[in-house]
Length: 301
View 1 (spheres, one colour):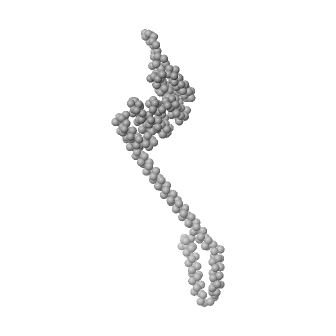
View 2: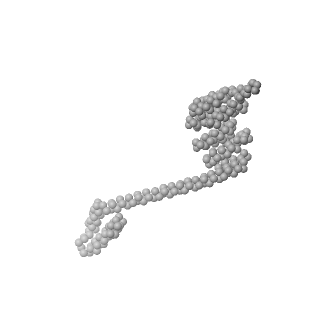
């Protein structure tokens, strides 16, 4: 902003101009009051760091220019006022208001001075909000009246590198680089190389996101499988503990006695001994098989 202050000071000197003693007095062109307000706003911004007062001074200068006829001086003063106002809003952390504040004076993006559009692109790209300035820059670059300006090539390159590439609009960036006659051969090669690099990076990020998503899905499936296995193990432990519990043994003994009573089976007769041996052997096998699953190391020892 020190450069802006020096620019406004140079503008005033150019408008007023010093008089030499040897020169006759001549009529000086009328200086718009907005020029002095611009000097005051730049001083408040750079020297006093009073950003709110600098913004208010810029707005008062704009109001005074509403009655001035359009001329080269008025156009330059308006642009300088916008530069000071944008800087004041940014310093007050009100950078989101910059676009609306600028457009209230120029109405449409196509009428913005190149310097003002450049500051808007730099500001919003620095704040990681390039999407906010996308429509404004596109409208300005597509206007036929702006395509003949000497600043068109540099602004197109700035828009391509600071807005289109960060937003991933690679096709639009490539179309602008190839289709615009404002780029020199060196500029075109540089921006095409930047587009190629951005496309490769975008492809790597896409593949990395797919791999992470696949790993996440596999991890989710493994987690579900482990949960199911833990549930089955708890069910098996509950069933085994129920089978080995004392009430179950008593129920089994009661069922055996009931069966003997119903079938009128006399265990004291010699003919019943083979059956009892087989039955006892069957119970031992069942007990051994059950205990071998629950306590394999203890049984092996």
